Image (cartoon, rainbow over all chains, first blue to last red; front, side):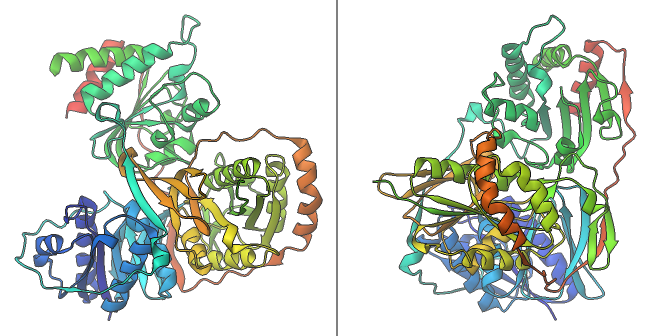
Length: 345
Length: 269
């Protein structure tokens, strides 16, 4: 019989992030499929608010590690808290959201407790009373269904891949708070802050309905023999402002910036989509001025509806990678799109 | 006086991103079709880690850089022909599988053992670098486990910037969700850094650096320890390519206005 621990870190206000509710939903489904017990383990500055919110999730036990030492996302303290929770729960399966915070520490915790870890899990379930997970290999180029015999098995669920648990609050949860004392060596690192782009300069919007990807073509010479980078910037920024889309870029465009060439000033490596960039999840994606070759389009694995604008009718997008390819000048099309959006908004 | 560090970079080998990859069932589990024939490159994020290590060494006299890499000997040799021309390092090759389907914990064990076997490595100066994820397994698990095996509890993942302050402390900038970065201050080594992209461009090939590296690289390759990676209870039910092809509707000979209207309708749905 498997014992399942749903493990999450609380936010600074003591609540749970959306990704945690998704992992909780997955943990509950797995517990139901395996007929195993579900324990909740929470760590953070405080855990009672979060525990109360999910008190009705069906867990038989609530464990917590709380206090100022566990407020900041720091490997040493996060790993110590998670280790204590896993050990106290005697879990054989640990299901957690694949946030940056837990992705940093849980693989190390798996090593510490003699277990194994799988990250970027996009589906999980049970077959003949044995759990399995789906995850992708070679940067989303092939999908595998994986089983393990070694326990504990730490499973980090990719945010956005699972429906969230949305049950009602169940009242006050009785949280068993574990006493975890950090050694001095675990305080060698301190988190001093978060750098976030100014609100009007924030072009990465994980919750956006649309991913807009700018390819290197925006910076190339146009029909008149000149590059129009300033105009490209203006068109793209206006589109982002009006559509509230998230901005991605192909690797080549980001790399041009690293080589000191004139490129779109608001792009950084954080915008990069593909083989060496992100694989975001959005319902729709619009690619512009990009060839749609494999290293780039692997980053589109989790974009449901795909459209592209390219001057090349034989580009990669035309070969079954997009639902619609518009063979057209992206400058002209996007100028017109902005005009239409301006009329609507 | 600036502090000198011992920087160990862990870097795997991955198929050239431009290659078409297809999974096949091998005797020991899944593998890539014609894997032995595929051209390989140094894993991209780990390569950034190597460039950052070299930059650190340039600015910190006395700093040494080792590159620990696990892969089949012929592939290691092929990849090093290029990588060795980029930056100076001492090579610690481990002769074994570079497959993305290999068990991360087994790879971590091999890398940690390789690091522990480096003569003269000073833990009080130790910085372990690597990519935060590989382009093969893409899990972000291996480096964390290497750190645990080495007893390093100051670990950072998705690192885009490492600044060493005058007092010897580090300022580390790590990626968070939504384009944000977390800034941490670490008192000093030992520490582990899983690099994202950083800010350095790929160094140009320098044949002189290549010649210096080659003096130690080839003898090291000849003596590379053979590694067998245990599966640790990992099994694969299936490994399949996703449904690649969509029914692409190619829209030609339409005005920008017509296309724009269709796109706006689609966005607004």
